[in-house]
Length: 136
Image (cartoon, rainbow, N blue to C red; front, side, top):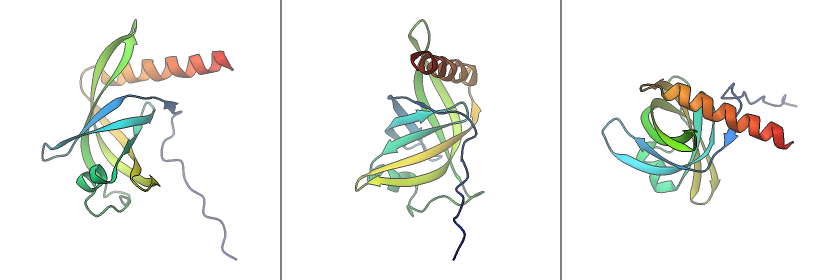
């Protein structure tokens, strides 16, 4: 009998459910619009259709460790009194999974933020986590 494989947590930060659009830009400048499923301080899980996946991951295979796909992301978060702030972050597609026939989730690990992007994401995630604790 084989031992059960332990699936490692790909992100070591708490995730918050978020529903917003995100633009994902490939290194060649091609941009795609997808939806954010959840967000953490270190990454984002996006939902997209098969056509978008084919554009971002031509072979449609889960990226191997160290062979990640570089992308640039653009999305907004409301941090200052509900006013949206634009976030631009470089990152790598590190995970892919099929959810339904034409729905996939891609995990993007952030590698670099422009300007104060990290602080804004950090504040937004902290606020959503605090709100969820207060409701419990």
